[in-house]
Image (cartoon, rainbow, N blue to C red):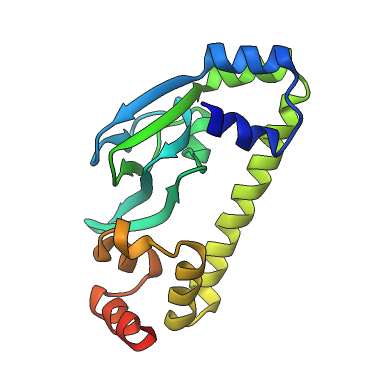
Length: 188
């Protein structure tokens, strides 16, 4: 939990009553690789913070998995549309490694926002951070060459090839596994 509290403190001062409430509210999860945190049709009930591990978000398009994102240690994971609209999700969220996560439910989060107005700033700053990342990913897919997308991914996540199967990386980049292998060899 200390890693999560440190991440929150980097965004906003955390007074003692808020820290106490967070410690009482947050739930720890130790989950195995290949565990789904969310599947289509479910409503996203929790925001997760990754203390240890890696997750990916993906959806099916014509029976083919399309990876939207990867998140690793010190990242928050959520199905934004489902969590905030309280509607069924369209995506999967899967753990790619044995993981330690911390979570809070939608109702618990709303209660903390109501009880601790300063905590609203944490929510706003995290929403801004991940919205910007999402826009950058979408823009990169439209504007960058395959080589530029590959280089950007390596800059953002240097150990990705050690932790994530090639087929998921290729799907995330919008490339075939063979193209990713060629880029990897060319840039090695």
